[in-house]
Every structure is written in structure tokens, then in C-alpha cells.
View 1 (cartoon, rainbow, N blue to C red):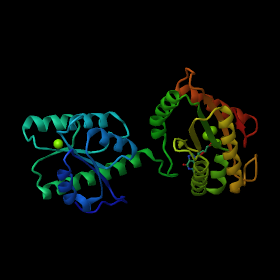
View 2 (cartoon, helix red, strand yellow; view 1 turned 30 degrees about the vertical axis):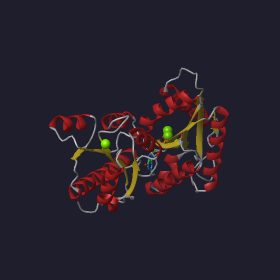
View 3 (cartoon, protein in one colour; view 1 turned 45 degrees about the vertical axis):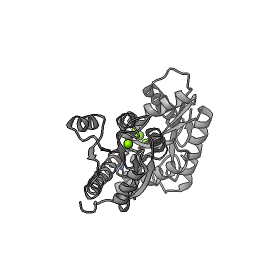
View 4 (spheres, rainbow, N blue to C red; view 1 turned 90 degrees about the horizontal axis):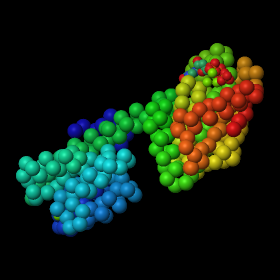
Length: 304
Ligand code: GH3
Ligand code: MG
Ligand code: MG
Ligand code: MG
Ligand code: MG
């Protein structure tokens, strides 16, 4: 395959086999194709994937303890790991074995003794496909103007974040952020300036969400939404105020705002406690109602 028309990082490949000699052979065949890691049991392989998901797994079928089929099935059960292509490598070359491997979720099947040129070619192909699908998945979840998560991604992640919080006994904080008098901004300065303004506001919001599970997304036109696990209502209000103040400090001149001479945002903050029986829709609605109150109270402010 030719070089892909998009940036790629060095792929990470995991070889799983209980026989060190097999690992060595496979390593020699594919080492130029990426950064290569090893595991000598199914359990070790799963632990490795959970910690640092690779871009491809070469998986032996027959291993003491957990066999390759089981390892693959378990990978496919975890949403974050299900996208990793698994190539089975096995001495059992029968049609039934091949079907079993594919049914377990494998993308390909290599029989031992391994022809190294064939192994290399297959690994190369599946790495290229993985890079392409990562790129497209990224694109589908990203807002084209601001580069932050889009509404589709937000709708997909919010239930997962809320479940994560409930499991760990965390509150979930939500912020709904809306640019004040943005229609007037466009009317006076043009849509291109409006676009640049949205990019600056999005970057400012992102800068203030530092924790790994925090999420900022473009919710609609000039509206943004943030999810902050482990954040109660006081925390949500404090973060909202930080963001509001930071946008004001950007000092983007707004020639027609009744609120301030610069671009400002109003923020609605809300949170749910882990024991609370509240849906994602209800929680978002709370933040939306708080935003409405912030607008009604004069804009450029935070309401809870
Ligand atoms: P309020 O303070 O009540 O929020 O007033 P507003 O003018 O900000 O609200 P309104 O909903 O009336 O207008 C939102 C404007 O946002 C209208 C729309 O043209 C603009 N807008 C939405 N998406 C984009 C975009 O991607 N780029 C630009 N430049 N403008 C956008
Ligand atoms: Mg084996
Ligand atoms: Mg709006
Ligand atoms: Mg509006
Ligand atoms: Mg607005």
C-alpha cells in the first residue's frame, strides 16, 4: 500500500505467544513495521492492552491458561479495545479453526510454520487499515471548525461518563456555555470573524479542562458543553466562573454587545450526585435552564 494521505504515528504491535522462539521469529519479520511488544500469556496480553492499547495484536491460539480465542473475545467486549485488529497465528490450519478465529473477532489468520514475508505483508495491510479507520473515526467525532468534540461524540460519551461516575461514586458536573450577542457579532464583523471567535472560545474552554476524563464539545452553533467527572455543583460553578472570566480576558472586541465591549459568554452549571436517579437528558436540561437564567440575569455570568 502507498503512504496514507494523512498523518500517522508509529504503530504499536503486540505479539502474544507462549513460546519465546515464536515471538522471536515473528519479531524478526515485522520489527520494521512499528514498535513491537510481547506477552507470553493471554492474561498478560489483556493487561497490556488495557493499559496501553496497541494498534494490532498477533495472537497465538494455543496457550496454557486463557487461549487466543478467549483473549480476542474479551478484547472485543471492551469498547475502547474492540477496534484493535487481531490476527490469529496458529498451527491449527483447518477450515473450522479459521472460522472459529474469525467468529471470535479476528481480522485475519496466519498458519504456522509462519511464512515471514506473508506475515509481514498481512501485518502491513492491517496496520494501514487501522490507521485509516482511526483517522475516519476521529474525523467523525470532531467538530470541523473548532477541532473539539462534536455533538455526535458528546451524545455517545455522556452516558458512558455518567455510568463511569456512578460506578466510582463521583458527581458529574455539566456546563452549558453560550456566546453572548453572537448574532450581532456576526452582523457587525462578518461570519469569518465569527468563526475565528468560536475557535478562540473553544480553545479557551479546552484550556480550562485539564483532567483526563473532562470533555468539551461543540453542542450547536455558538453553544458549547462540558462534562467534568468528579465535580460537584460547587466545583462546576467554580470551573464555569474560570471559563467565563478567561473568555472575557481574551478581550475580543465586540462592537455591538450590550453586555461588554468584548466577547463574553453566559454559563449554566449543573451537577448530579452518584446516587441520584437522573438521566443524561435531565442533567443537560438542568444546565440549559441554568444558562437561560444566566442570560435572563444580564449575560456574562454563571448560574447554577
Ligand atoms: P444570546 O446572547 O441570547 O445568546 O444572543 P445570540 O445573538 O448569541 O443568540 P442567537 O441564537 O440569536 O444567535 C446565535 C448566532 O450564532 C446566529 C448564528 O448565525 C450564529 N452562528 C451559529 N453557528 C455559527 C458558526 O458556525 N459560525 C458563525 N460565524 N456564526 C454562527
Ligand atoms: Mg502456543
Ligand atoms: Mg445560542
Ligand atoms: Mg439563542
Ligand atoms: Mg448566544
